[in-house]
Image 1 (cartoon, rainbow, N blue to C red):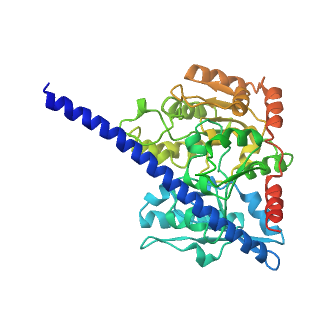
Image 2: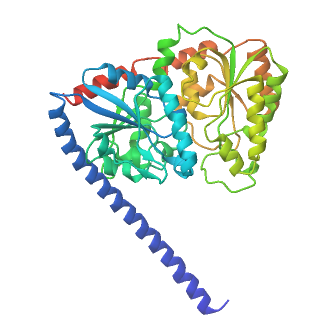
Image 3: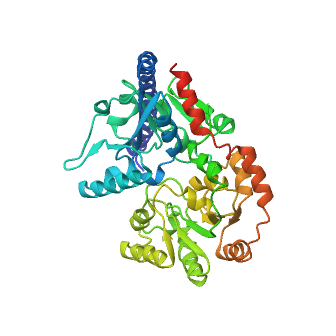
Length: 437
């Protein structure tokens, strides 16, 4: 190796360190500037809304891209029942919806409109197709914006833009159960919203260290989780119909991906149990089955090369023949009327836990994320399985024998975590009313 090449490599490595330092400095300056911009905007908007609230209702808009992630129905209803607010759902195209073609997006929006029509919710399109464009939110004159998803926001609906004319509030579409703070706390929508609503003080304490007072804006309010309201309010009204729900996540581990994937989590176990559970269901027609896949399961399994679209269409059709396929967000009554659930999706652990029913937790052995203490207690009250033999034993015990030895422990844990308080929406409306009084 020549002296020249050694010197070149040394200079290159030093330059990389300098470049890395410069990038970090730039990101800090950028985050600080965005934070200051939003703070000033929110202060001005807050003063305006307090004046407006004295003589007229405030307009509230929920930004929704994926109906399956709609978890704010109870809050939407409470807002419209109040004398201080009027709410509407703004259909948008964040995250994977932004990758759809114009025709695909139009079809997706029509399904979303049908979903909200079924719920009786007022809705408007905030994104147009043919050609693709976002309607300025100022056209709808919202005073308050609720986000329930943080992934890949369009800039026109980003807090940096929206803070000029509305207060923004973030309610995650799931109760965070893993310790991946990059997902739960460090996305721009989470950092720059006016308020971040958490389930309780345990989650607030878990998130707080990730919010820098200089580069972050959001204040925490621990008032519960609207999606859990219906589980406690409807629980006594829904009879157990004996459903067994299989709800797989999409993020299969690299070992099963023929193609490179871009997701950062590997919690799905579909590669070893997707076919097995379908065959078990076929052998037990006496059981009522519901297949509740993650909205991205079909596209991501195809993208990873695990199955072809034809194989996936056949797989979904097999479930339709023996049970029901549920791909919408209004599944609360199904959960309450079920016997048990099989899932590897973190989003459902707290929601299904609120029902008090047994859950078979399909665990991916390659999943290395931290599990915070509050959710560790909840997970310990479920039945974790890591292979087919453990899964078979759990199915025999819970589905065939109807034996649930962890029942008492689970109900106690659910109560301790406050999953069945059932008044999150009411608390949030009361908070908003007091805030703007």
